[in-house]
Image (cartoon, rainbow, N blue to C red; front, side):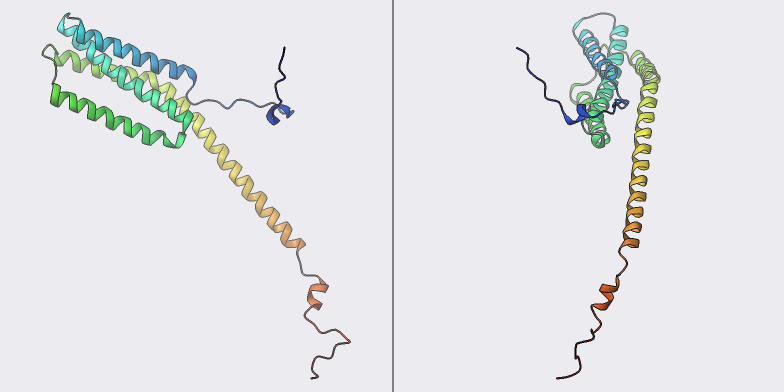
Length: 196
């Protein structure tokens, strides 16, 4: 048995509809989730497996940068799809959460004894530069799409205002008082107004 699929009003129209370009495509979501998973693997390996302290420090530095960047990109892409106006507050909240968690860890747990600060710092700095360079094309694409969306919204608003002004002007020309409207306040011939 085949079930008939109800035709929607959208599919009934004869105009082809083009998908609007996405600022953050599916590949960005996949890349961010992959980055988060890889960061968790690196951090887990550095914490559990005992190997050279320099390589452990590099794994922790790279893992933290990948985790932070992956979470930021994931939050940006997800919030842009769900509620674009809430993207900036969500990113601010995520930043605050990352600072609080890292601060709590450093104050109450402390850095591991095997951590080599020079290797860790160089890895974090290099990881940040690589992530910024890697995400620059994504940010440029998102900015271009958002700017074109904004320009289209401004044009639509201007066209709507012009149409409203034209309609108001046309209505103003058509609504001039008629002679019947003027005579309604004047006395007619057969009426006696001044007699009591």
